[in-house]
Each structure stands twice: as structure tokens, then as C-alpha cells.
Length: 420
Image (cartoon, rainbow, N blue to C red; front, side, top):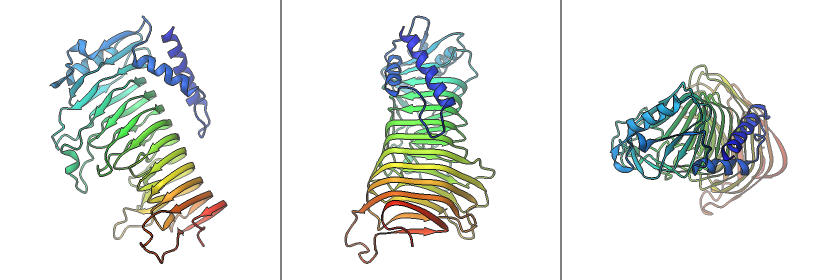
């Protein structure tokens, strides 16, 4: 019975993602869905589900024996099963190198992953190991649930080796070319690079996850997305040394709500205009979220570059700021270099609504748009931010907004005052 209820929940979830409006949540009961997710985490599935426990394939939960090949063999067996399958990662410490868990698969979707162990990287002290750590790729239906932790141990060596132009560090969890994915309950800590990297995917739900790394950890984005459609992130806590959530080219129809962000660089769309022939970004909603002691709050950033694209249909709504440096920011001069051209990314139809709290900057709203492609359809509605920085710092500078190459539609309260 539990397994039948679980399949029903997944079916409703996927249907809601496929049929839902781009700014609406999938049409399923989140509390009921989470309850069923934890049935998988606790192994409460039906007798028709074949279990593939990594320990049965030789993995050792002792934290010292390398178990990479054993995990791969367990996944391959589950992937090639002609029926319902569950991959089990039990409690214990598993030492793993880089793993590519690849389809196509023959199981009856979704592949359920009961994840309750603690994963540790084989290359935790090696700065040379930059391959992404755990990669799921090229199949449909993935359901990861449990109280497990992915610990990248980035503090050991990886964060110390920082240089301009270096290849990015290994992501804890990379998900690519997947459809219909649900991730719940897991924890990711101290990734060498990104915590979760999602690309070329469709229909994603991430809920009740915890992501953490110290604010000084470089490029440790919490959830990083590109070329991905229909994503819902909710009821999670993300604190890193970079963006809590970053959405770059080709990210569409995303809803983020009830997420606590901080430390980090806030919720960021971009950087855009970095690569040739980028896909547009549209249909992004961030609402009912809180940010504390972050570098940025709601941010859109683009390079000054020749690469044209568009970012549109973006809503930042009902956000609470606590000592945020740049609460509202459009930055089309990001990473400016001498001789660079104006950004060719057109930003349009963006609303910042009911954004309240405190900031440590005298200039709390910055809308720096491209001179060649001015922003269009920018709305600020019911903004109330108060300065809580050093009262003696720039005491002659008024609490204000700064706007260039944009005409703003103001509605309701505006603090700081609108641009002239």
C-alpha cells in the first residue's frame, strides 16, 4: 500500500510540473509528498521493489575503504533492472572517488535512492582532482530521499587553491540530462565547488535540503542551474560562500519559495552574456524567502560582452532582508574589463515586490542597466529597507537608490526613495 501511495504522489507531482503555469507551484500537497518521500528514506516500499544495497556489492561503511566501484556496480544493477528498483546507501561513512552513474536504464521509473549514509571524497586532500564528484546522467525518473550527507571536505585543500581562470572545482552532486527528479531531506556540506549542479534537465523538485559552507569558501554555489526547465525549490536552508541559488543561461520556469539564504551572495540570475549563443532566461519567481548577512539579495547580473540574449518574466516577491549589502541589484557591468562593450543581454518585465528588512549599504537599490540595451518593464512595488550599517560611514551620503539606463515603474511605499 505504501508503494502504491508513493507512485500516486510521484504521478501527481510530475503532472503538476508538466501542466502547471510557469509561476505556479506544482499541483500537489507538499506535506503529503514529503511524508511519502520519508517512506522511501525509511525503506517502507512494497514487495515488488527490488533493493540494491551498496553494501551487498562490497561497499564498506568504514570511512577508509574506497568503495567507488561498488557504488557503480550497485547503480548499474538497479539501472538495468526490468522493474521497480531502489538503490540503498545505508548509514555509515563511505569513501568515494569521482563517479559517473549513467543511463540509459531499463528500470520502471523512478529509481528510488534511500540515502542515509555519509559520503566522503577519496580526493579530499588533492587539489588536482577537479572532476565532478557524484554525477547522475541520462535517464528519466530519480527520487533521492533520506538523512544522508555529501561532505566534499573542500576546506582540506580545494578552497586554498584559488586563481583566476582556473577550472572550477568539483561539484558535490551533478545532475545532467535527467527528467522527473525529486530530492528531499539530504545535506550537502563543504563542497569543493558547487553543491548541486543541474544542467539540461526537466521537471525538478528540491525540498527540505540543507546546504552549508562558510562564507569565505570560494565558488560554492548552493544550487546552480543551466539549460533546465520547470524547477521547484522549497523549504530549504542554504548558506555558502557564493550564490545560494544561481540560474544562468537557458534556465526557465523556476519557482523558489520558503528558502533561508545566508551566508552567501543571495539569489542570482546570471551571470548572463558570458558564452556565445546563450539561451534565454524566463519565468523565474523567488518568493517568501529570507536572506541574512548576504552580499546580495535579489540580483540579476550580466557580462559586458558581445553575446546577446534575453532575461524576462522575473519576480522577486515577499523577501525579508537582514543586514544584506545589496538587497536589490541589476548589474549589467559585472566583471567589466578594459575595452569591453556594453552588455547585449536585454532585461525586461522584472518585478521587485514587498521587499523589506535591513541593509548595510547607503545605496540599497542599484539598477545599472546596459546603455545599448536599456532595461524595460522594471517595477518596484512596496519596498521598505532600513539602513543598519555604521552610522559614521559615509555619513554625508543619503540613503538612496541608483538607476542608470532604465525607467522604473514605482508602486506603493519606496524606501529608499526612488531614483530621480
